[in-house]
Amino acid sequence: MRLKAAFLLLAGLLAATQTIAADKTMIVLDASGSMWGQINGRSKIDIARETLATVLKSVPVGSELGLMVYGHREKGSCSDIELAVPPGAGTENAINAFVAGLNPKGKTPLTHAVEEAAEALKYTEDKATVVLVTDGLETCEADPCALASALESKGVDFTTHVVGFGLTAEEGKKVACLAENTGGKYFQASDATQLVAALTATVAEAPMSKPQEQVVEAKPAVEFNTLFDSVLSEGGPSIGEDNHVQWLVYKADENGQRTGDDLTSEYKGAYSANFPAGKYVAVAKLDSVIEKQVAFEVKDGDVARPFVNFDAGTVIVHPKRTPDAAEDDREIRVDVAFGDYTTTYYGTSKFYAAAGPVKLKGSVGPTAVEETVTLKAGEQLEHNLIVGSGTVLNSAIYAEGGPAVDSGDVYFEVVAANKAIDGTRKQIGYSYGTGSKIDVPPGDHVLTAKLGAATAEIPFTIKAGEMADVSVNLNAGVLAITAPGANFIEIFDAKKDIQGNRKSVSNHYGAEWQETLPAGDYAIAVTYEGDTAPKEKPATVKAGERSEVTVE
Image (cartoon, rainbow, N blue to C red; front, side, top):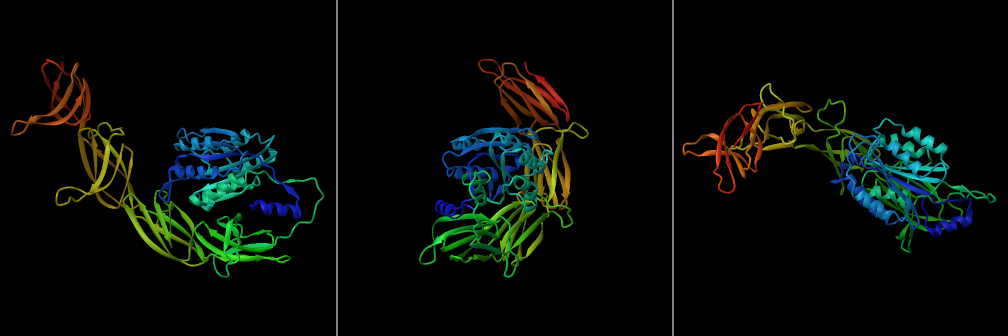
């Protein structure tokens, strides 16, 4: 619980049995490739940048902060961990500047990153706190729970707080042990608002060590005079320790309305506290989305019991491409809307929602479905959201039985099988490079491929949930031209039309040019600067072969 200065002073006068000492804090930030995932239409890394910039403005003067980052320099590396900003006072601008330049791309070696952060803080010699912000689980075969126990046993006074940014509740359990085994807290942050709250609690207001006993005569403990509790439905069980509930407490004015800044904030469904006698207003937020307000009064010798019923339930969405799919599809985007609130998930989506209609939209590529489910208060509703899409794995070859095309320059496009009245086909999806993927609805389609001046297509049929390998035969080769001293090279079809004109296929300024062309006969025209006369030379391109021609 975070109390304002006046309440801390009063609590100390009533029953001061502990003291809290500031320690050094290291922020360990996930910059793995998954941080490009989106929440409410914004990438998680952009949300993290903005949130840190906001929170660091509130860091008390003199606080010693550092920054450790992983996954930002190379793909597939379990050693991509960097001490970006050593811990010290006044490092806020340096931290913001480093985070602003991050380009997430790698793996998630969070266990070793926390270990290196502890070492940098000299945790075996000094009090130290690590705040881990991660949107994924360990991917480098390390055990975060075992590490937490080891750090706790060796550290002078070591604490890890963990912020699960966009993790599901089940995923959160796998990293919460880093906090639980060191006496810290785990925070679930599903959007920007919750991330601000979590970082405020761990960085701006709580870079504090574990309580130390004062060498003073013990005094009797003060009984809690306020017991907060919340439920999802009338007569339902307490939400208890669930940290998806945030309580904000304000002083009440003579009209019973909240006034001033919040006096305290706590993330639990139910908790106990002490307040001086007086009138208050408590605001309870479930997932920072569903908000309830309750007035209460603290009287001497009595216990106040602020209580709210959120009239809400839990929804678990399982996005699949077919009803019988064994696993949820992490590529499917799930848009959620209830009341005035909207948010976005990818893959399995678990969230609290107000009782009543909940709109769900699942989409992958051009395929989308919309459904509405009805949620009852206190209910946990699981729903399969079927987005019937297939996936095309694109490839191309130069010739039948010939070499495969290995290029990132190939432009693949999936178009409708049927042409419109003007002869065009509707585009369904596209990608660049062999080995790329395009998500498409089930049915009949055409895959086209274009490389250089060569274009080809092939029809295909795909089913929902199917991943189909589709290869386009370009029936093409490569023509490499060298023309010493040339200013301009142009390639024409060898055959002239009825008017005697030849079709220009490709051109280039310079003395060398290489182009992918359909198999056939061509004419190479070369021009020069000055008085040198133009030159021309025939060339033949064979499918799957390279032809080299010199024009002199």
